[in-house]
Length: 194
Image 1 (cartoon, one colour):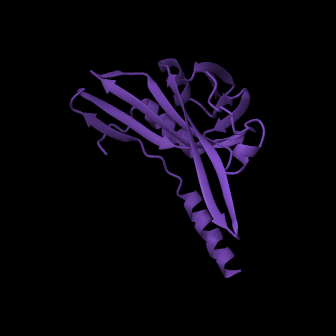
Image 2: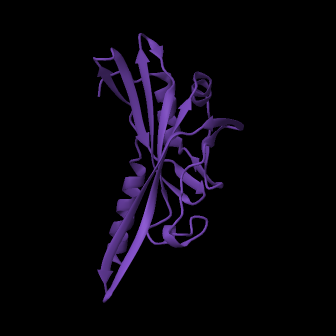
Image 3: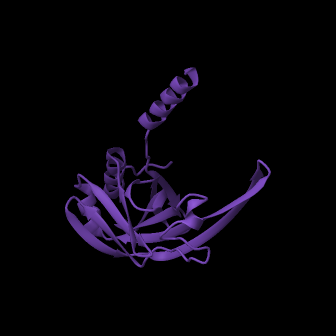
């Protein structure tokens, strides 16, 4: 009982400390500033687990370059990704489909997914006199957000993304604190070095 209470308190403390700081660095070679914020987005539905979303914007000669968002997903858990539908065969190839969507409030925009990559990891372990194994797939893809989308984000009340892998949808949503950080990020407000 005591362990459960301590664990519950730790979880509440960690969840309450949700923070996503925009980091700014100078690139002396490019003579530009690079803004970066890293977070993960809550999975509302789907078979992909969002491991990270890294937002990057370069400001060169006082002009904003397009925002890129590098997403990292994991397909299923260690055992289920090798055994369950829709990624159900060991000969499967799971990767992000070529298109995704961003829903800002009630307006949907279609975006191409670039830099799509797949990393497959196999893990083997033993226990209780048996040998166990499983695989998981890490999927990567990049979205480019136009200045028009950045303006919409600066006024947004809700942001969701929809990705597809093998035609199966996964929907992500930015938490309220993430949305605050994204608004700061697109406004270029934190132009201080970190």
